[in-house]
Length: 205
Image 1 (cartoon, one colour):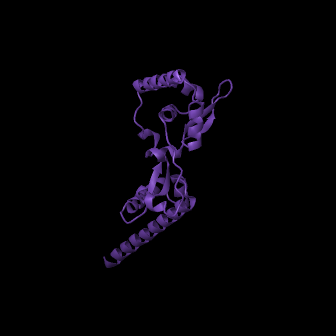
Image 2 (image 1 turned 120 degrees about the horizontal axis):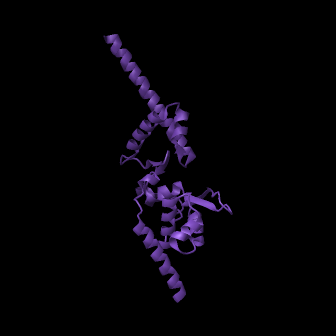
Image 3 (image 1 turned 180 degrees about the vertical axis):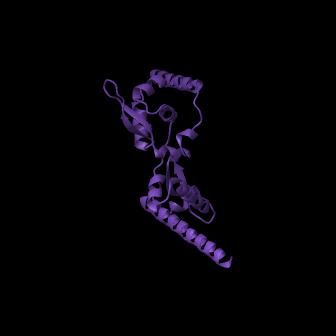
């Protein structure tokens, strides 16, 4: 019995060592990359399946959430990223440049909402919903990195298709598009009315 217990303890200790090594490897990869990394790629790196890798990442996130840690893990679709905690911002700007901030006007928010819910979507489809040109709004959202070109529509002229980016998920604090609140017909109609008001205001000026 004693020998059996010693073997069991030895196996458990061996697993703990392997798990700690897997954590260290993924932490090193995420830190070095700086950007998000697909969980499947991390699984390949530590030679584990995706399910096991997600378990280890969950434990890592729990450790990072403790008050004495300045970093955390965020989930973005099927990827994860190592980031500093938001409450560390005031300390970071003492030694680093203030990060670029963007201001989203009502027009930009409406256009972004349409892209988020209807993607992949063309400029023409956005304009049909809003009733006004979206050229400026789309270009600004591209500059901010909140949307990106995701292909071309198989139609005459092959217009560009747009979709949201990981930066969009990060900025709005959601893991995936599935977490976005549902958009109903009433809200779409409100977009149209607000767009019409913009046109009228421009005409009055």
